[in-house]
Image 1: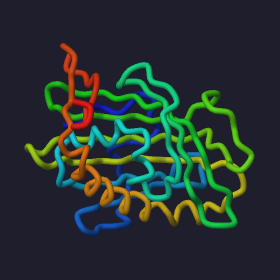
Image 2 (image 1 turned 90 degrees about the horizontal axis):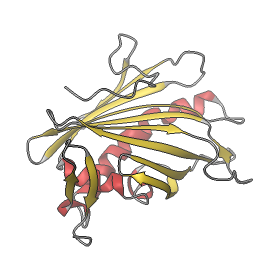
Image 3 (image 1 turned 180 degrees about the vertical axis):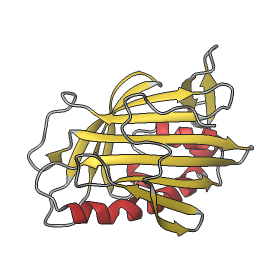
Image 4 (image 1 turned 30 degrees about the vertical axis):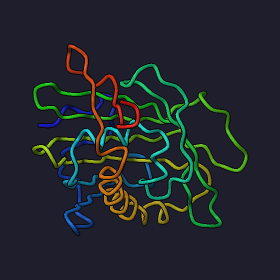
Length: 220
């Protein structure tokens, strides 16, 4: 079993409302209507042919968003209390003439020592980075990554997400990207995690089994 997603989460991990929209190359993508929103939530599932430590190394790199998340054109770390609580700024490219969206995410990471499953809960927050005229700031977004090691060389990934993109944007455009983004991103994540410096990463834990740092080969 996975560790539980945040108690703040409004997206259910398991629900009869999930509808299978896509099933290709080992990636399954489900969508569901989100209460009070014109924009759908999605759940994507796959098994990545890469170990959990390499995936965590990618996640620990604030600039890696541009390398694997489809449509991410800028990313940087804003603030870090420790590995389990971080803040990152990103920009998402959208088709012209729609203005690109930017957002700041609070990222919380938890690990279940019994199952070794890792959960990352991300919520859009305000006040960390000034808004920029050329972007529309997203104020409501929740994303959850759930990673479960499958032996030494594979990791099962579940990705839940819902975004209120703010500003003037047709819901059909956002909903049309729901399959494209997770499918392309998951394939890119698998490829990236198997390259240097991520593939030789080492994860450090505290006495309670929580992740405290991820070190790449260059840092060790």
